[in-house]
Image (cartoon, rainbow, N blue to C red):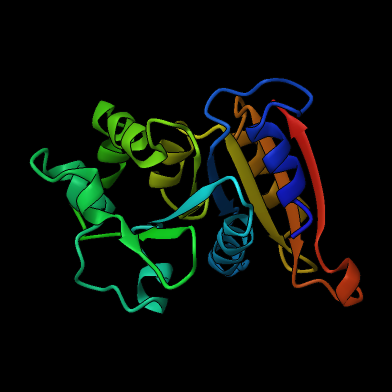
Length: 211
């Protein structure tokens, strides 16, 4: 993914400006069906190839938990469990994978007050633990679509970088604009054009800007 380079530049302080929590990256979309979960997994795999960093992929799309299902982790304790139960330590839900430098956190059990948990002070503590005290771990979240649930806004508020996936020839421009408006105040936003009819070499067009 070409967008990996600007994301990494922000992490190591070589972007246009220094970002707080640049190691926290969330992948989202305006509406369902734009390929954000697949993009989040691909981005995490690509970032895990970087020599100096470990990557933690977190399923934060609580309503659908696609990453959890794809990886066969249904029923495993995850993000929601560690947020709802202060006796559950963040390290307990971080699972090693067969891919070097890649860990994953499942969505966990659904809670009745998901948005409140994602926007809580407990969430900030969990993110600090997910990131590791040495800051050599990148945390990549899959989020629910911006215009579909309140959970996405709560999650994005903690992030240093946002990657928004847009389905080519499918998502109306006004819908994209509404989603971007909801991200007002986000330090960095990168756009990926997905499902494009362009040749494979041009299949991912990315555009980014600083909030």
